[in-house]
View 1 (cartoon, chains in turn yellow, cyan):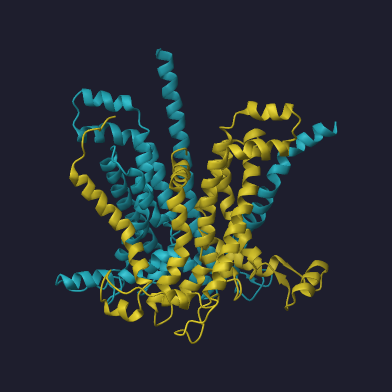
View 2 (view 1 turned 90 degrees about the horizontal axis):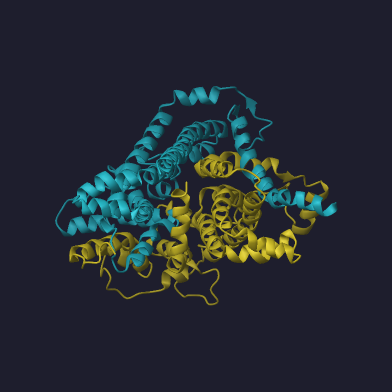
Length: 310
Length: 303
């Protein structure tokens, strides 16, 4: 209403420039991931080149059903890492949502704690850098949170899965999932709380009059109504779990490596294979890019709820 | 009777999983870290075997030039990143707060950098900064300018630029949301009174946006202290210690130098710093709300 007059073409130029600046590096990486290393280093062609999927074949060599003839030794176990990342990110997202949803519901409906307490603790957790958790989590997951291998449960696990030493959280998927769930819970509770507040109480009371128990009310009445909030929370949790490097690198072992760890390890080598590295980077970036394109509205909701609502 | 009991237990049952997980995986580790920071502790020991050394780790850090360097780098990084991003983000929001077709597409494109893994962001920028094959130096070469050693001589500037690329959109989107929720009546009145666009911005839009802007800035500041992966991939703290921010130094002290006690003490210093920031932010929002409530009361009394 305020500015319905035709816009100056200069604005469109500014916008085009901004879009170019924010998306340019991603497109550059995308283009380079289809180039051979020789082409990247010699810099021929720019955007005009013959695309090749060799980099992707090399990155995914451990899950391909055929053997590409240019790969003589499959050194990069990207496929396995990708599956680890997927398991960890998906399970931790689902757990965080379920647990966070229940807690948020209790906080709102049973007036359990003040809103202040929740926002304060959300902020407190947001302020803790993952690097700060590195030392204690490393120590705890390797020592304190272990089951003695001679003990009842620990012994049983050792008999089933084999291996030596005590049964520890470190090196397992569940160890990494546990810390991600804990890290993301406050934010999820906070976001969902602001959505649950908007669910009319009368709706729940009507369900209760019809004989629904508290759990039924929660799952059949409240959950369907806060879907947008759930989507926002899910994307944020998934993004953190999917992208996180530091804690995963401290807690994982050879078999539970996630994709970010793989990329960092390959970047620190003396001779960086740019093509392959960019292909792995692209594969890691694809899920967040898809989310962004599909659900940018929810993401923006989640982001603004974080600051504007205080 | 049993139903009443069950009803009374319901909130606890709903809360229990979240409370247990956060106690085990957040509160306990933080307490454990404080405890560990008083010990001479290396990764092969359990914390019970580590020798208790009192405040030695803290005093050591207090006079450790490397720690000072790292703290300085962190503060400089956070200061420049937040101030430049605030100016750019708010400026862009003011500029683009119009009915432009395709605004939602623009916003979607803008949040892309934030969603991509920091590791990948570091990877992209490390390539673009590469001394010989990187995009920037190729460009400089093609227009006949001398090459720049981005990640060498200008390492800190380069990582600041990368962070600005990634996070300016965050401030842009938040300030755009704030801008679009401003009361239309105030802007309308100003326009009728003949305020120029600049006057509208300085006297009406910015003051009204201020609460959101301050919260946004503080959130960004807190996050700026957490940046690690981008820098790890781009420079790994080098050359020398010129880009080794505290978070990176903590992780290196723990994993490379194997001094968990010192790393824990360093983590505590960082936490105290961030705690002060957070408390300031929380106090500010509460104060803001109280003031708004008081204003509303005054207005209602007048009616």
